[in-house]
Image 1 (cartoon, rainbow, N blue to C red):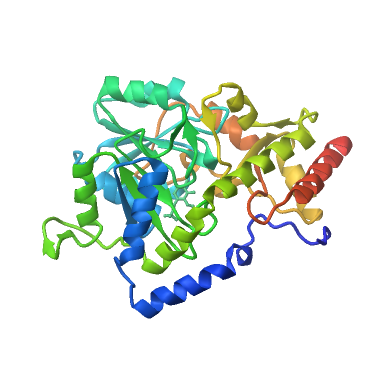
Image 2 (cartoon, rainbow, N blue to C red):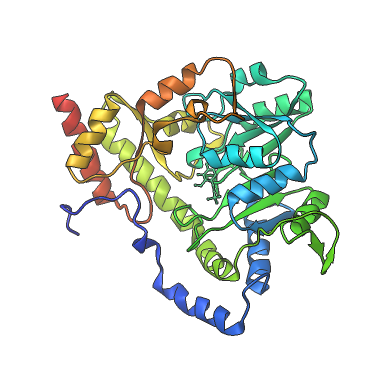
Length: 371
Ligand SMILES: Cc1ncc(COP(=O)(O)O)c(C=O)c1O
């Protein structure tokens, strides 16, 4: 390995696994393109892995969330609480479903701050979307308590949370439904767009399955609908990748621990996952490895000069800073401000090994010796 080569944040060509090709070709030869057996196999496999009653594969997570929200039949313009640290996709789904995203502050882990969430609830509020960002599940027990008390739906936006656990239960079954993304860089990623909606509510599952396929059930139209189907070819890839998912997660956990061991004496860095570990209820999967660092922008610049790519999510803009007419921003965002002054994602994933992490950590320590 040439350590003078650039350490990339993402390495797309390395996502390609040659041994999957023959399965893709077989599928193509069979002419199984849409809603074929690989789709149903994937849905069954995911049901078992996530321990949920129904899985509906969709075109992507954004449309899965939109479809899920539409099929809850909430009054038009219902308010839906969503944390500031999320991709604009979460917001777009709420707006497309005819509702109003109400942006809430985040905690020191970058997740919905449950202690503040009551401040955002009023008569128009109908749901809370927990975004399980960076492979970390939110404080589910507390959110559920609030949802039950206020009669709100809890929805898991788990585009980045596949495989993450809370109290030994995987993301997917804490609320009325959850959505996952199979975007290529995700922990379970295909070679194109993909996503799914999972639920323990079988009636809702049936509605959504029809809705995602033009509102049809056994060929007859039974409701409104749209087209949000996963391609069979993606299902072939995802079925194969799912076999190895525990190793993928193991590698990410080992990588996070290695970063911690290399950097734990550096007081300029805060590791959210270490605080979470102490609480003994979270099992994070590290879709991203986001840490809080002093002198963040200067460090980022230093690392890029040393051929190490890092990332500040959403181009540095939490959702409360995005100027879209439909987004409601109330109350203060002190947690978000603090977090976004310091957050930085370090490289992690299939293309990053322990030697890379050692090199990255050495460079980080070198930076803080000089700065
Ligand atoms: C937090 C979050 N939400 C939603 C999405 C959207 O997922 P998809 O591209 O499958 O629609 C992503 C994907 O990048 C994401 O990271």
